Each structure stands twice: as structure tokens, then as C-alpha cells.
Image (cartoon, rainbow over all chains, first blue to last red):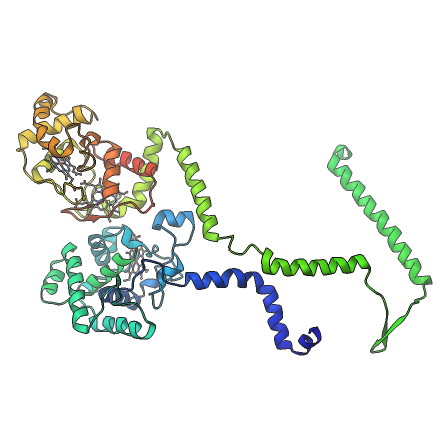
Length: 221
Length: 283
């Protein structure tokens, strides 16, 4: 067998790899297979939250904000429980980020609220003196893109079997049904907001981007 | 210098001398052997570029040890390796719970200065983004804590009502008493029920005590909150009153503050921040 391995460098390399990486293989692989599954209670995003997520990506919030709480006491004291891989099962792509110019946002929905986010997105310095986060006032004018959000939800449902419409999971349904649900969900957020222009637009059936991004931030728990 | 008196130095020196002597003796022996020795023995017959090899079997002990290690290695790979018995998160959780225990016992009986210091730290990190660094609520973005929790605030609550902490009794209706009666009740609550200090209107305490019956229906005649159905007014002005607020959260007329129940604050930290918040109102 040894002579055979000596004559087949490829298999020899595989053998060497297995010997060296053995501890890694037996500890990492089974754990990985298990923890890559959706954690119990983790649900796919609603279309409104997905629209907010798309705005988050579009504006590169992830360039300044991570979404990954590491198991360090200093982080769990500030942000809450450390993140588990199963929590990202429906994040496509995940938004772990690699820089923290601002704080981690993985559980920001546990301690920041609609009215606070509204003030903060309009003018971060109005609540956090000296903040270097940019103002996102244009989100109060720009309408959210429901169609793309629905397309994304529909696609991941069909292609990746994301469990929309399953018992205990968010309902997606047809385009019309999903739109109705998104408007209803947005209504609850608009009710907690103060900006009159956003409220007036909502009454006319026009949901502003700020509503969607707040829905997304509130869903991060 | 008396460095030979030191045991460690002495031992090191003896060891060094031993190494030198042994090296000289052993190397000398081999050098001599190289000069005189002739190789003997049975050749194996293998030839590599003209170099040949003696038959030189492994000593018995060596081969047994070698085979033993291989057998042990296989066993360790397949059965002995501590599979599934170590978890990084488990270790983390264990260390944190040990830390928390130490933290709790260290601050089990904090004095007022400790609470104030800890409370200020907690406030600046956890509360200031909403209530402002000075606790003034930043132009109505959150409750102004420099006027909250005072005797006047009770009057205000009675006149305007209060809601949003999710107590079983729901909300407290506005205008149950007029301003004069409310002032009397407030005097009673501060001076007699909660006993946090002297009221601004000590002459009204007796009158307030009689009027308190209105409040007692919900808040309990002893002010203990009727078993958690309404805030415990007997704690009014104390840290515990704020701990209760933090445990309930509040979605009221000003805005929304979520519960602090996700483990980011320990009980002692909540008490500390409560002590600090109470010091913010200048009454």
C-alpha cells in the first residue's frame, strides 16, 4: 500500500491531508452540518422587511455596520446574545460585514424603536452628538420598491424552498395578497412615526423607503 | 558575589558541567571508534547508487513500542478522541456564568457611591442615545428624566393619565382628581407611602391620605401595586420603581422604549441605573 501511495502523489496528498486535518474534520464538519440549519423560530423576512434589507444593501450600511455578535462578554453586554449560524439561514446574502465604524446591528430591534430610528436616520446627530453616520433624509421622499422585494421572496421560495406559506411561517401568497400584507405591516410602523409627509403619503398608498428600512431594523432581534 | 549560594545557580552549574563531561566522554569514544572500527555484518543486497546496507533488524523493544503507538493512534482516532465533548460556546457560557457569579457577589451590597458610579456608566451607554446625555429627553424625543419621578410628576400623571407599560390593569385614566386633590395625594405618596423624603406640602399629607383611596383601588391600599396589576407606588422615587419600568418597557404618548429583558443588564445594574436616574431630578 505504501509503495502504491508513493507512486500516486495525488492520493498521497489526500492521505497526508486527512492525517493532518483529522481533528478538524471530525469536529468541524458534523457541527457545521448541524448549525447551518435554520434555528428553531427563525423565520424568513416578510416582503416589507426584504424591501428594507434591499435598501440596507443598496446604501452599503454593511460597510459601516456588522451583523455578527461574537461570544465576547464586551459584545454580549452591549448588543445581546451572541449570534448563531442558524440565525442567518434566510439571509441571502448574509450581511455579517467586516468593519464596525458604527455598532453591530444584529439585534438592534431589541433596543431601538421606530420613533428613535426615525429621528436617527433623518439626522443621526440629533440623538447621538458627534455621530459620523450620514443622514438618510432622502429615504423620507423616495418610495420603496415593493416589486423587487416580492420578486426576491418569490424566487427564494421557488428556487431554495424557503418556507413561505408553510404553517407558522410568514405568508407570501400572490402578488396582490403580498402587497396587501405589506401595506398593513407598514401601517403599524407609520402609526408610530411622527413625520407628517410620510403619513400623508402612506394614506395615498405610497410607502416610503424609511418605513421599509425601519421594518427591517425592527426585525433584527 | 555569593552567587554559588543560590541553589538554582548551583544546580545549573552542576548540570552544565555534567553535560560538558558527558559530551566529551561520549564524543571521544565515537571518534576513537571511527578511527579503528571496521564495518562487519551481513549485507541486505539492496544497492542505491553503489551504497549498500547491512541487515540491521530493529531491536525488539523498539518494534513493540512502535506497533504499540500505531495501535494506540488508531484507537485514539476512532474511539479515544474526545468527539462531541468540547464546545467552544459551552466553554464561553461557563466562563460567563462564573464571571456573573463573581460580579454579583462582588457587588452584593453596594454603597450609594458605587451605585451612582455604575449607574452613570450604564446610563451613558444604554439610555443616553434616547434620553440624552443629561437625561433631558432631547426636546421631547423621550421622557425628560430631570422632571420625571418627582412629586410634581405624580400630579401630572393624575391629570394626564398614563399608559403603555402593559400592566394587567391597562391604562390609568386621565383626570381622576382635580389639581388640588392630586397635589395632596402626591404629598401623601412621597412623604408617607414611599417615605422618600419630606413633601413640599406637608400640610396636605393627611388630606392626601384620605384621597388615596381612589388610587388604592388599582395601586393597592398599601401601594404595593395589587400583586403586579399596576406600578407599586410605595416604591415611587426609589430605584426599584425604575427597575419595574425597565422590566416593563413603555409605549406611551412620547414614544416607545423596549423592555430591558434580554440579559444586557443584570439586576444590580438596573438598580444602579435607577439610583442614578433618581439623582437626575433636581428636587
